[in-house]
Length: 258
Image 1: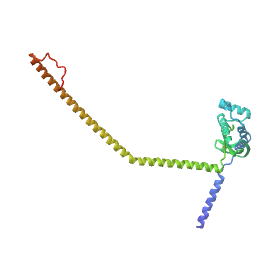
Image 2: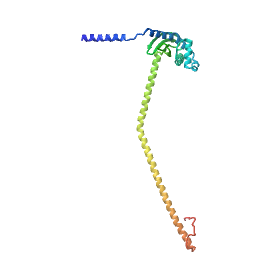
Image 3: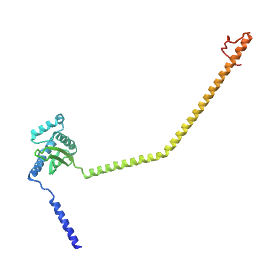
Image 4: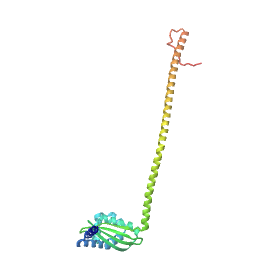
């Protein structure tokens, strides 16, 4: 048993040493690019972006024109669209952060084809972090930049509480809606039964009306037949009283019953 625990400790030490040795070290050229990106972020981009006033200039310039303007003024490479978006990000966030009063710690690291620099700054209203992303090549083009206000613990708790409240409220609202739908299942058969009875009553009334109409039509036909027979008898009687051989010349225009 003692040998087993000794072997287990040796394996753990070997894995620990392997993990420590797996961290890749930067080459001299990569370290130079990281240092240069860090320097440009702190000394150039943060003050420049914080000092730009939002106006219609970037709206009127194309991406290539922005790249040319920044490159000719500061001798640095930027993506025109990304730089214009960075100016908008800074101006929007500075309404919350306030004027940047101090540039504090910064760090840079290589992440694949990008160099990411994070700069901590102090604002007149609250602290924030500036994130800048450069291309990991000879040009070191600025691909993205944003000013992110730091939230206090109270603000984070407030947002968490609001999200929880919205989530629970949505769940309860859905549950109430489902309960209403389930309770409606008991009413639907009654509504269907009532509609069926109403339809049956309407059908019955329609049948009675049709029967009455047929009876009236039959009685009318009988009356018309009786009237024709009566007309023929009267015409024959008148012809006989006049001594005529036929009633063809006589026309009965109306009959009044007494």
